[in-house]
Image (cartoon, rainbow, N blue to C red; front, side, top):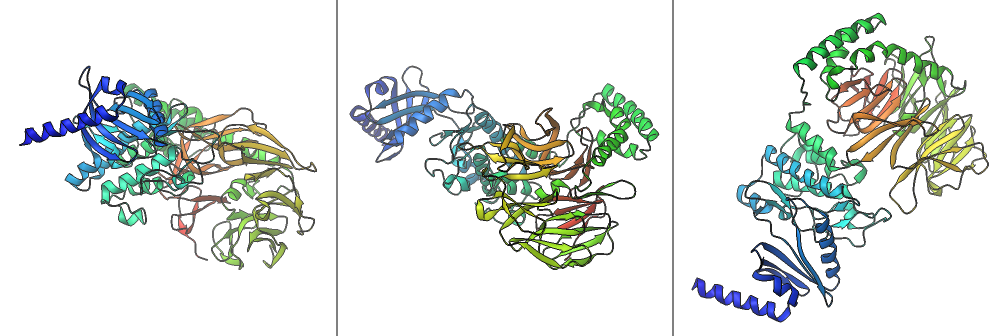
Length: 634
């Protein structure tokens, strides 16, 4: 009976082939089975006549024939055993016939249905394999975006290798596009941008991988409250970041995600491999470095040496002695640079000539903290708090929820309730200056500068009393606004592309015109002293870069993985994009210090304190060395 049915079934297939398949396809392939069929086509398992190699035939009629042609072009440019090869393509009378290599094995969905939820070890192993494949796709020129990452399209081969199939809705990234043509994919694995509005990119595939990891661990697709629902606490922050609604807050590429997964796999420890000679050299250079550092008064040299010895990426400490030996010289050079600022630059010095006052990087993080010679002011949820520099004497300064705190001479300027306000440092009484939807307030050169949300975020200015407010430029909306010595520095989206370029603009001009200083894709711009700092998104990860104010002498901070940061005269404070720890790196990029395992969504520096918001939007304060972490209450 079974043999009779198989013969009958095969006869029906052959009749279908004879009736509808074009001659070139019939000449090369014979049907084995029909996997699915619909009004516009079908999917068949076929065998190549010449050598018996199995393939999957996809027949697409009408508009979907274009998808088949696109899939053929994409598969033809890829040559990797983890991705099916394109074997045959023909378009005949509006119908596309695509044969791609059949991948032996079990789908990940079938595996989970059989074995149940997977262990943390299994999930990381599978995710790392997918990262490898996505790196291959996303590093193509132009990048290939799969757009349908799901367990049904992930194959576990008989040898245990992971393979990725079904490139039917894959597309190449179009640099000048602002959105995809249609919203397409598989719910619930589709990233928010996949439903339309903006263009999908590599981060869309990473979002889908995050949902896959949730499914493998929970057998559900619930992306809410991952901290409680996801069963593996060490892996939960990685998954939570993958499924952020805003692509800017996800891992920016597969390589960055891969490093985070390896970090969890190793138990939160970075792998350090030393040769015997390298270890001996490190030890010798450590003591040499400490001796030189001690000569300059660096009594903490031993602690610094131990910490650096545990950090990955420092070639056996070959630069250790020089780093410690010249540390004090570098600090003195930074102080000298600040001594040369304008007298009214809202940056103050105490009796020891230590820099105090507004930090440009604070304003990028909401401007929650600012200091003068006497006190530190920080923005709580309901009011502005004042405290002494030693952290004592906390008291309410002004009962307003504020942002963009600035100090100029004897007053505090801030944004609140949609307007710009001023409060005298002596009495704390608020006074409304500009009644508009203002953000990114900066006080510089005796004037107010702010982005006006009533005019598409364009730059406006007014005098210190809030009168004579006017538009500075007709330039498109500005991002990451910094102002120093009469010049504005900002990023702006290049029309028709997804590239955010860096500009400067002389504010003394009547209708200021921007001047391009960096034409790469740049984010989180900060001005500190004579340098611009910014984050570049690259295939290898988010790279922190520095260059001079005129755009020259650009350098990357090698081995630094940055999610958010604040560049100050004391060093660059940042949240590590892999471990999410709070760290500090020296301004030359050579010395890294771990401060706290805390997760920070924003980083403000005022006096000797770091102010940061945690994942629950609670404001913390800790000293610059990471000690004395305290949750602040309004």
